[in-house]
Image (cartoon, rainbow, N blue to C red; front, side):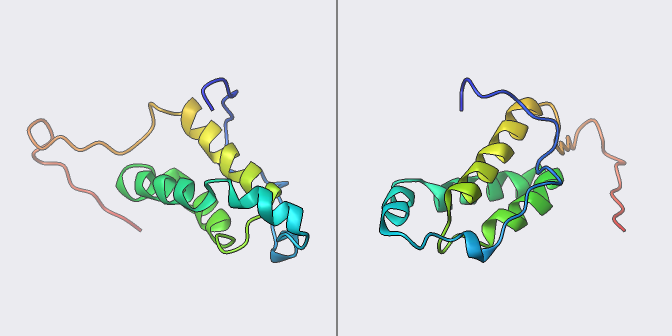
Length: 107
């Protein structure tokens, strides 16, 4: 992903994922068994929970298929990684010393 081109959205509107995409052929299952799908999603979830709430929906969508991912699911995970690469300056940051009166309100 070092040479990947950054994208502007965490998940494109035209992406359609479903359980029907799950591999049914042994070759596809064998290929996907070598892809670090679950561990990549877990790493992205860590970022999402700690500082990147902007990727919440995208991670929710791709994490539904962790039991039997397909190449299309993996492409969507790589899309999220490309988004993260292009938006490293976005995130939540709280500095207790400079923002002592900071209050967060959520709706």
